[in-house]
Length: 125
Image (cartoon, rainbow, N blue to C red; front, side, top):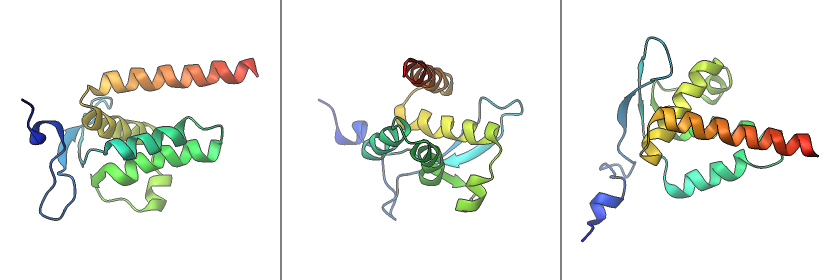
């Protein structure tokens, strides 16, 4: 029989999901960051933004992953907007990886497939 603790993310005494130190596997020097997983509801909300027809919503979705999941280093909203693309992508992949229980490589592949699908859809219109 499944136990609740086996199928849910654990929360600390402060009520926040427990964070983990994760290696950014897609960067050459593989630095580490501290991230917390995103809940199922938050993932659905971000996915909805990411797949909308609005460019503004898509940008907001990417920033929201980092805003909600990155614990250390602490970044302001302005810092998140100023992130270098390679770091933003690597941090997002790490957060999504622990949230979905899959490898960063698999998350990157799924993201690439989604983007290709959206591009193909736009070309048809």
